[in-house]
Length: 313
Image 1: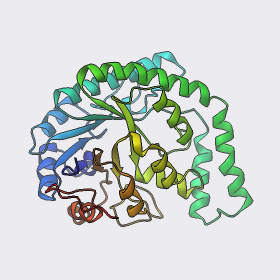
Image 2: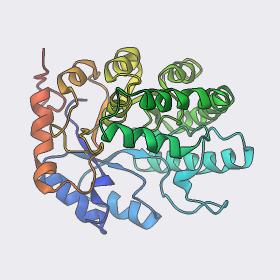
Image 3: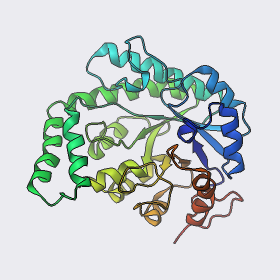
Image 4: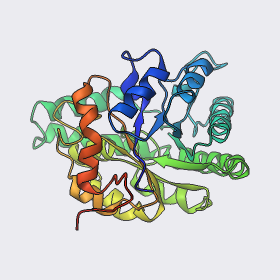
């Protein structure tokens, strides 16, 4: 399936209120498909996107990303919450996203499985210390390893809930012919981490549920001194159904591919031919970046619009 390269609607935020026009622009830049992400806040926005010239190949749960019955954004609902009311509400939105995917003939839905509630200030401090060049200090090491310790206190219960959620959603997805991709998460308190991913995948149906790699999220973990990009890829490439492609620089991820520190040759070696490719690029990147992405991916062999694989060897 290397003939297809999607652009996420993340790039449309604040730039293209009319998603039909975004689809047209993506086509002009050389993309062949779209991923609808949480920028799509209403059913009307989704329908307008669906009317565009490019097919929607994947949806990033939750879509539409509207308010929940609990008074918080559906995007913030926790699919592995210990509070069953919140988990059921999160599942309700995920089921709706799967139904939209089936209706639009999209191949997959990307899932964030949730998080372990921890002190977010500690995570922010870790990022601040990294930016200040203090990774070799005892202060950094103390903060760095305090997060997994605090997380571990309740993580097993949250992972068990994540497994329950995936097993319920996979039944719905199987009936509708939609794949589910469990995504590499960005923040350290989120589920699953690299070892928990093995648990979730082992307890799910491989014909329905797979791994969704995110280059920038894995790069963030590696930058902070945790799991490397290579480990994520080597452990889960055989279950990969899709990948978010973006770079990471000294500021943040979701940068234009090639404008950061990602080892793209490493990434290219591990992406199965069948995996969906999605450029998930922040809206602050301009048209020059977006128009250059297809050729960048072609050079890596990650996008071959004519069906000729020129992958790096």
